[in-house]
Each structure stands twice: as structure tokens, then as C-alpha cells.
Amino acid sequence: MRYDEVVPDAHVTLASTGDPCVVLHKRAAPAGVSPTAVFVFNHVDGSTTWRDAEDLHPASAPRPA
Image (tube, rainbow, N blue to C red):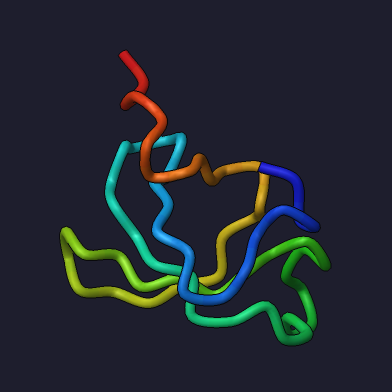
């Protein structure tokens, strides 16, 4: 997804793993993190992390093979 397409509370999947996540916020990322990163909650392992918007797909998108 493009950074401007991502909104807080959006349900997304990680392109790299297919894990379902929810976007927590898009506030300014800390130093050393991509400026197009968003903070997400991963439903699979319960973690929170900054992920680049390019690594996100809308939740309705099919999981990568």
C-alpha cells in the first residue's frame, strides 16, 4: 500500500508473512525508521512494530504464495 492509503484502525496483512494486523497510528516514526512506516499490532504474535507502508496489503487482499 502507499503511505497515503493507510489509515488508523485499518485491518491489513503483512506482505512478507501474510499475518493479519491493525494499524495503530501513523505519527512520526522514530529516528532510524522509514518516514513512510506505520505502527501496527500483529494479531498472530501479539507484537507491535513499525512497518513500512509498502509491506502492507488491505486485509481483503489474498495472502502471498
